[in-house]
Structure formats: structure tokens, C-alpha cells
Image (cartoon, rainbow, N blue to C red; front, side, top):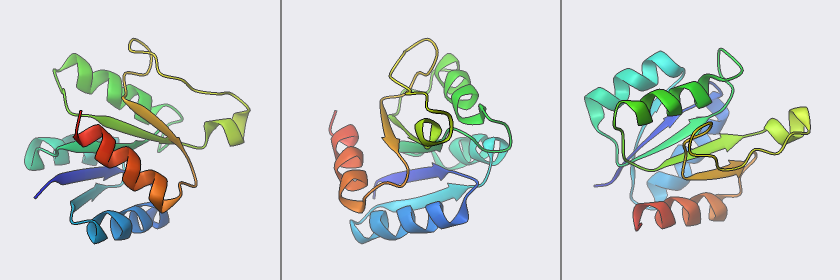
Length: 123
């Protein structure tokens, strides 16, 4: 069974994503912050990571993605963000600054989430 780790400090986001992903047959693990997420990756070896940008610190998700890539984490990372709604800034893919595979704006529609996840897993 494909394992997906969701690292997000918003339990409502985690629960909604979990519900839709489990309905599609994925095993879902979650963590509420960067430290828990790092431990969960080592313990569970997920096939895909869904990562929030802002958690305890405004850049926790970005810093975590950078750290994971430096350490050789090759699995796909889907970043959830509400940055453009909060700040007016538009985040885009940049391998050096934000080394993730896809961005999805919160709130994410279930069909979009499933489409992105399946697309990343088949790459």
C-alpha cells in the first residue's frame, strides 16, 4: 500500500486530506510540525510527502523540504500553501529555494488533491 505523510499543523486540513486519500486506497500518516514530520519520515518511509509551508515558523515547510533534499530524500513532495492568499506572493517551483515537485493552493479541492498525488506517484 502506498504511504503518504501529511505534515501540517492544521488538524482540519490533515483530516480532510486523510479522508480523501484513504478513500482512494492510500495509507496516510500525519505529523503536526517539522520535528514530528522528520521523525515520521525516518520511521515510516513514505512514498510521498504533503507538506504545509507555514507551521510553527513561517518557513517551516520550505526549510524542511530543503533539509530533506540535502539529505537525499528523493520521494515527491507536494506543498500545500495559502501564501498567496495571506501575503499576495505567488510561490513557484525553484529547485534551490523551494525544492518540491508541486504546489497546491489551500483550500484544495479533493479531485485536485487526488489528481496531483496520483500524478506525482506515477512519475
